[in-house]
Image 1 (cartoon, one colour):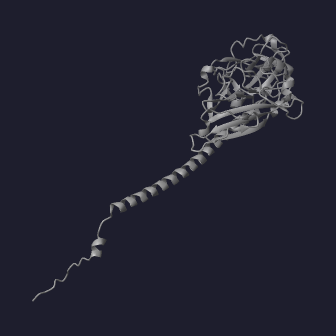
Image 2 (cartoon, one colour):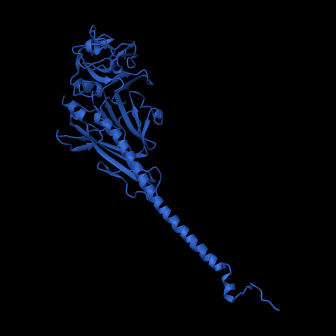
Image 3 (cartoon, rainbow, N blue to C red):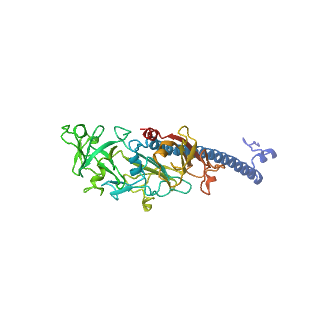
Length: 402
């Protein structure tokens, strides 16, 4: 008897067709579709990455310009405090003449201020003696002290200079550790700066009141700014600064504040960074030290432009003139009348993005001073942030009327 098998595969034409693999055409179409998908995703990622970089780099530029402006504005607002007064001898012999000073912790230790080599003025733009910064940028100077009596008016009269101290009519406001600016009565002698090491009553830390003069000694003394701890004077040169003691009789003595708070700061853009140098602490005039970060300390990065102008009230009222010098002529020495007309300083700081962006700025930064700010040749590859402020020079205004 014939028996059919329990299972028998039956292959139909349709079944055979359903078991075939992908054809070459189908495989190529699938590859193309996949590549198009990857391309679309890549383009989307690139687009959003450019947006992200543009946003973050723009934010970096804005932060850097704001920080640089804040640092400049802080020093400019306090400029002139304790270091400028409307005194004929002060301006003629110190601002327009030579000021001798000393710092044992500085190199060189003995240095000077003069009209042609760092003038002793509260504010300055591109002062002589200070190396220029990057092309198309300005150098800005600001000087101030920390005197406890602020604007010192006409100073105090000097009865005599013994070579180790000044006899004065009034010691109010002076304390051990202050810097003293001695101004001669007549032409022919320089101003000089000394560190107050001892004096009568409230001046010294003992309170005995036994001394009759404001001394500038060379041995350790009790410094008021250091809790009356013993410190060594660093601003007094043994043997003096070379000015005859007779020059200061009947002259004036001004309080500049503590030695650690007396500042003559200069800001310059060097290598795309805003840098700061304090002439009281370092030799800012040395061209060979312009790139030394221990002298010109970087305080903000990616700064490509720095511009400044003085606001002058030539009629004694509101500002009606903008220029880069306090007096009208370039290279002139400001008189008392020139300082009386100074009101404000206008500054513009431009920072750029850290790296080139896919969509850089196409219009150069502007400011209300000289219009367009000149940048480097490849400036269109970057994004920029411009910060502009007008800073009132209140201590100079008050000092000019004292």
